[in-house]
Amino acid sequence: MLGTRGVVLRAGGRQFTRVLSGLNPSEGSPDQCCGLMVATRSLSSEAPPQGPRVPPASGATMPDPEASYPALEKLGLIAAEHVRIKDLAKVEELVNTIIGGGFSRLQVIVDYDMTLCRYHVNGKQAVSSFGIMDNSPDMPEYYREEANRLLAKYYPIEVDPKMTEEEKIPYMVEWYQQIHDLLVKCSIRQASIEGMVSASSARLRDGSEELCQKLHRAGVPVLVLSAGMGDVLEQVLRHFKVYTDNVKVVSNFFNYNEQGIMVGFKGNLIHMFNKNEDAIHSSDYFEKLQNRTNVILMGDSLGDIKMALGVPQPSSVLKIGFLNDKIDERLPAFMDNFDIVLLDDQTMDVANSIVDLLK
Ligand SMILES: [Mg+2]
Image (cartoon, rainbow, N blue to C red; front, side):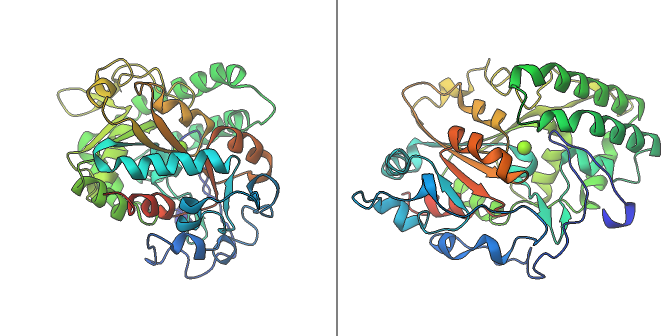
């Protein structure tokens, strides 16, 4: 669908639709597995030659020859070519705490766009929650044109490594507000969302269904916290049968009138940098889970590390960052902020391998 509709550029929980040429033809095949497959799933076998470049594994991830990290070794995280860990001792301890605490002490907090869903599929940029609408024939052409214009203006700001978060926020709010106003003009029918999703090429990161099934069986709460479009991503979760009763979605949801036409948004805007100020953080969600002090957090943006700020302390939060784009420029900041950084990894193998060790 993306290919037939040409270039659609959105970002900020949105998407770029651009061809990543040269992907391995097997990329995207259902070969995901768990456990020690992490070590054998080399990025270089799957990454597009002209796509994200993976810097050589050296420097901060080189293990101290005097130290041992048995948990990380067992998970294959030391050897894996596409894994970067700044503080091996800290991550070894975090992983051991999470494994030792078992399912009863665990909760999971995950971003949606480009985290729970893939960043690229078969050589093309994958669709985000925004992208599903961008590419839907149900949306008017003027929406795509204006959304692209806004993207060209604001996306460079979002990913500018030289700007601080504080400097970026006013622009991001401006961008979201304009997109939201534009969406309202489109008179989106509530009944059309399901069709938009099922006709889209939306794909969860490989192994997501398996991970969600394990967490559901074990009764582990999963918070999906997204600055994207809640109505759309909820439908994606339903489509892939992972919207189970242990999953809570916090996002930007549409308000509909009596005719089922979208007329605005509910609550306060969630954007990529205020994920600690949303409705869930002012609710008793984390208080109710206060015995679940072990957290696996996953995101693809530095703003995502804020998602767990409401977890009662002390807690052990293992932050896994998916670095999908502009790898060289963003790697230092990702390594400073995420415990484990995964370079162009389109799978949930690392999370699955950790969860497999829990009882
Ligand atoms: Mg994201």
